Length: 338
Picture 1 (cartoon, rainbow, N blue to C red):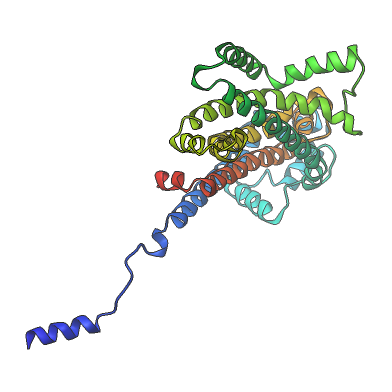
Picture 2 (picture 1 turned 180 degrees about the horizontal axis):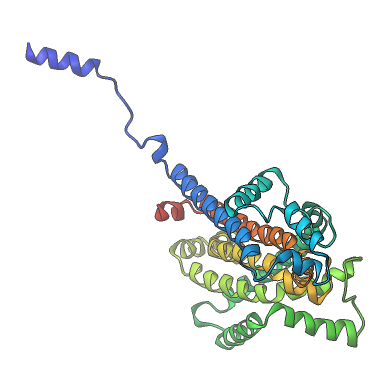
């Protein structure tokens, strides 16, 4: 009877498939980690941008209006900006403005900061994206070809020349490359314009200034990864099957070699966005970089705050997008991280 009861209980027990619950799935855990990291980073960035205007010595309104501005005007402007309120109240108002899209008013032009940023942001994005695409277009083919030529110890002289040249080029700051390009192609030869973005030719020198250094770095990484991948077992198997060399290199080796380069490429895109500050000033580019420098000189701190936020958020979003793309291409990296 005991046996019969046990059998009946076993038959009545619900059968459930073994496996992790939904919140234990790798993708869910990965998304949670990335979301928390992004939110914390955004909060730190917002808080730092808010604290920036309060850490500057002196009165920012007086500095923007000048020493000869009437005291009544200075006090009225401080009241309008809410600088007379307690610091926690100012912080809450600042957060509320960010959520509603109100970034304040420029102290110099009296225009909404959102309008100032909106007018300048497209030029900066165009410059950074074009420079990134140019870097990838040069680095991936160059690194792939050099990886094929220098594998298994071949082409020692080629490897040495390329490595030395890429290190030297990568260490030169973008704005110095820009100054050299202006002197050679703008002043001496007169081939290309050196200021503004009124024509397609005006993009050439700024894009080159931003892309030469990152292209050298990325090409080195692609070459190293290509050399490593070409020694993998599945590549030897592909050669044993008598597949064409082009198919082996482009279809089997290159996608795996680009996995590590993708992470570096995302970091380079973030650095390009930040690097536009100096390059834009070299070429008088009407973007956020030249605007933040002029705003600092004019002590227009609401504009500076907003541009710092835009640059910081751009870098954070790019890094998060790279992490997600890398996890899609190589789920093993997501599992290893977990």
